[in-house]
Length: 162
Image (cartoon, rainbow, N blue to C red; front, side):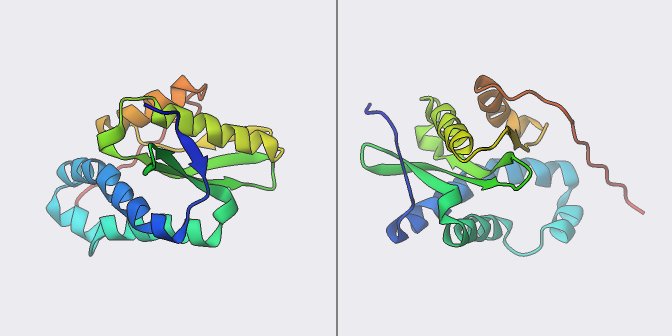
């Protein structure tokens, strides 16, 4: 396996970015759906949530191309990362994913290291990333911790039927 290449997205990458986003978020959304129950899930996530996630990722690439990149391996796009360079000196990793078919090879870790390098180069003093505490986010948490992130503020979301 060649080393991953980090580069700006091109127009012909958008289809791959959208496909990877949907594949990566499908098990997360399925877990949420199971936990919330069908009625609450549909109220909170009407329509096609995976399409909306893909739209959000695509929008970031189009609006902020300098705060996003794709990961290419052997000529194929296998991942992407979006981020924000905030005025307060805190860079924020946003939507990011590795194609499930390419997971388990250190691509996510390399992707985060590249993102952190770009943040440092841009003068950021801190970096943050938000993720879930549920089992479907466990791989993301492991990857973030592997590059040095530490949990500071856990988040809990409560619902109740009225």
